[in-house]
Amino acid sequence: MSKSKHVSETPATQQLRRHGVAFGEHPYDYVDHGGTGESARQLGVPEHHVVKTLVMEDEAARPLIVLMHGDCSVSTKNLARQIGCKSVQPCKPEVAQRHSGYMVGGTSPFGTRKRLPVYVEASVLALDTIYLNGGRRGYLVSIAPAVLTALLEAKPVECALPD
Image (cartoon, rainbow, N blue to C red; front, side, top):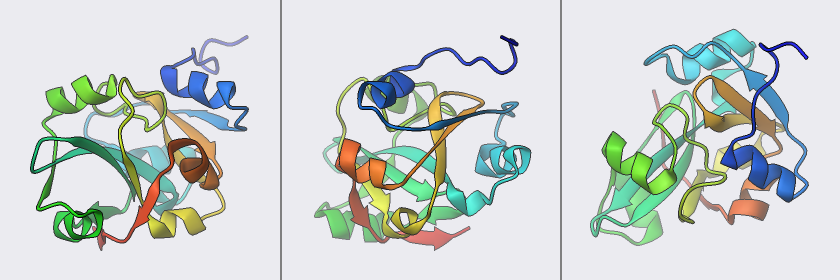
């Protein structure tokens, strides 16, 4: 087995396998601050289909995950209104890492340290296949979007802002 193709298990892939979810593995060369644009370019997929996992918190510092198209930003005002909070803001990287158990840049919504509420941009669920972090930097998994609602009980929201 060639080393470049083999990717060791992560808590995310363990959860997917445990639940019998079919997924593709897509390693790429991680670039600091390259974001979804860099992974989409290397993998030859539309950035709109690469979904970023954002760890945020509400006004009471309760953590939550937002899954958003790679080429969009989150309207925190719209998100807060839809989930019944006063405000939502991104967590600081060290706080996000503590909640999720993952390094920033390698955060997956699967296999998080604590079970966090997950919200997904509704239009993500309309795609055939999505690519999201598999639990480490430079590693995406491809899945059917229905897995997000089935496995994570992700609630659809509409809070995308085009980048």
